[in-house]
Image (cartoon, rainbow, N blue to C red; front, side, top):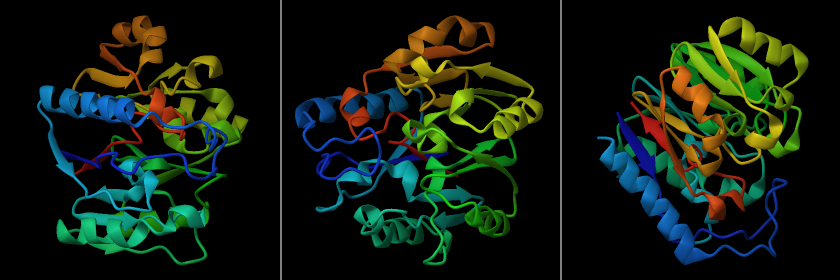
Length: 262
């Protein structure tokens, strides 16, 4: 498996499309480059292949490759971004998937879908979020395109505008999630469908702890992960905490910067 990343050459906060983004909160670009490079080298150290997408001028959020689409078994569902500010990325992500040999499915123009930001596999099931940036109507289309079981989850807190900000699969049997980011019905559904859940307080989740990835038994996320180290160790995981402060200014973290390719 490879991980698709995009260097932060053009990364900046140039518009406001989520509660984290404030145009007056300027990105420290050298620090952002350093933080991105540290994640890149962490993946390499953990034995992962990292592929790079070309950053394109005028698309400052291309660094968040998880939002490009969702992939499975040689098929990709391309994102159709909710906000016009990001829709300019779509042709570049289509080319990135097409050039890698994926069979690409497009969303209808009246349906928003934001890729692996709102679609995360737990084993063979695909858990999909809706409520802010992805329409629930997209879930059926993703299910059919990828031939997978889809579990729909409603997001209710705008600070957790994508599923990957509040829900982190650790294995086919373990997830960590922030219950207050979900409707009561969806939180109950997660607890019922996943064998072992680690519930993350909102105050900790706001440090983008759930915006992490697991490689083997290694959980990689933001520095706030230290608050969950004991729970994760008891569940059989080791932890790597990385500073993500510059990307959090745009509402992103480790998972947002990483699209897992099959």
